Amino acid sequence: MAVGYSGIALAACIHENASELEEHVIEVLQQFGSKMGKCCNVCGKQDGTTKCSACKLIYFCGKECQQKDWNLHKKFCNIVKTFDFCAEPSSTYMDMEPHQVIKLFNTMRDYYFDIADAGTVAPEIPKFHEEYRRICPTDIDNYDSLLYYWTNMSTFDAYHVDRSTKYRYSEKDFRSKLGQYFINRWYMCLKSKEPSSQLPMLEPGDILTDLVLSKVEEIGEPYQVNHSMKNSPVRPQTFQIGQTYVAIGFVDLSPLIMGSFEPDRRSTEPQQPMKYICYDKSPIVVARNKVLYQMMLDNVYIDSILQAWFSTRWSRKTLDDFQQSGAKVNANLDLTAHGSAEVMELLSHWITTILDLRSDPSVLESWTEHVKHLEMETLANLRYEHDRADFAYYFFRGTLFAENESDYLYGNVTMFGLPDSFKGYIRQKESIFFTIAIDFLKYTTSLLESVTSKIKSGLNRLIKHIQDQSVICTFATENFSMRNIQVLEAIKEMNPIAIDWSNIQEYLNLDNFFEMAEACDGTSTTHSLHFMCWTNYVCGTSLIDYPNPLYMARDIAQEQAIQYDKIKSKRPYLRQDEFMAHYLNSATMNLSSKYRQKFIDFVFSGRNIDIEEVYSEVFNPFASSNSTFFVKFNFKK
Image 1 (cartoon, rainbow, N blue to C red):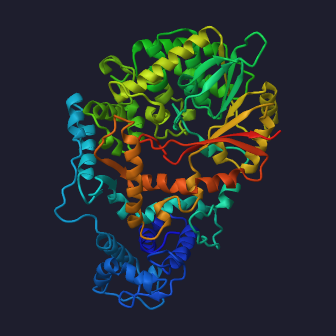
Image 2 (image 1 turned 90 degrees about the vertical axis):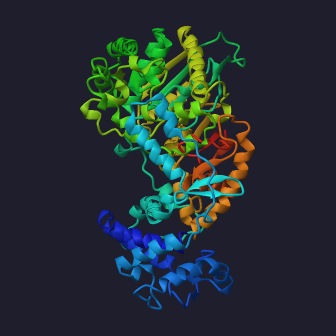
Image 3 (image 1 turned 180 degrees about the vertical axis):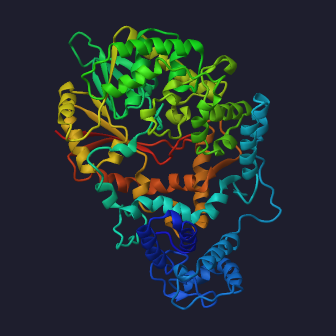
């Protein structure tokens, strides 16, 4: 797995973070680090037999790999020989004193990797900080943030530019935090180990089956997340009027606004409405969508619905429309339903809460905090100034469907106005661009206009169907498991044509999940789900899993550049001359495609299942995860 250079990085990271790591995690890491230090520095083969006679630290499996590495290793080796220590013949990085390891790591980081030739001029990066200042001249803090990002992107110490293709890859944090990346990547595996156990040596393609199969029977309290919108792309689909659809872990109704509707031509009976049955563990999600659906039934101004759904800021009309519809929902709430007490608490709070940004602008701080974790390379990849300015504006403010922000003086109560008893719900990074399946976006005058127009037209279409009762939605708070057999049987009784499970299978024991899914299965039900976190359990899907990862990253960058060239002409909003990405993100997308089928076979083989379709986007510059893939399947009858 992670060997060679990563071994030194890991040792340094352990010493620097010892106070924050659990004792048994450190023990497992040290055992693993000792193994890592004895792996070949070129190919990663375990139990390297040849040690460099000069530095006495680096191992090779034989002379061929040693000769192959010499032109690069000699730089590091010559520096190490000037140190005030000499490694014992049997030592590894883990045997050194902390100050020696950190000094060694810094030396290797600075000298082992040639970033770029001296005097090479990097392709120009758009001055998106200046573009943002032109539309928001008084927003100094965010201007400074953008200037910081732009400065890093324009510096060779921060980004690598492949001069043959003009593709640029983030490198600064990757080099300096390699050990921390390793710990972050495998921390769940480390925590799952007994204090006396060892972290196994894995090969690319190996699956950590114990982590995948040892999940709980139901999603527990740690998974309390306040999502305002989906964080995976919603692919357009056709819904049949008269059929029943079930969405579990649904988050919002975006599949309906991205989809289309047609009559069920297979039925000879009088046309019945389409039923869209929504379940979610989060009472926040259920309460929010109950109000949004009521606003559609009340036929309120469409911008009020869109702001309540997607925007951080509301107009006074949106606030009034939301609270009036919310009061109706609260008055008609079924108090016998599971989770109704929590939903009522939220509704009662929202319909009486006003977040006036004039008196307290700090209510939007949680949006600013979570967007800091988004990748800023997207800004540098956009082709036109107005798209970069729009994206930065949304990035920092989250304001949508608003003509003039000065008229939108109220905070979104469903995002920022939770009662104290719900403060434990965590806001994660989210963006309207995560929801859009970019392969199906038609670019018009601007990127943001293209996105908002698609959403607005889809919502108009949905409202018409809701108004004429051809589409009926219901919402319920449920936590799915085999113990909740009454709900499973109720879904089976509905005989749904489709069940969307979101990605809840990633939080559950797989055997339990498929048992639960089959318990809901109708006569001809198609099940769909997606995998976002699967690379956490498959070795070889991250650069962290390889020796000398930066060298490998540059080879992958060439492959990525070829893929980007194939799609950029179809996406006119992207720059045609240069592409920028973080090493880890870019490589994970490329590497994950090599092992996706093996993971699919592991999950589905041996089960009473036919896979109908596997789908993933070619490349989405806005996605929260470019390794996400979707599966449709049926149970064999």
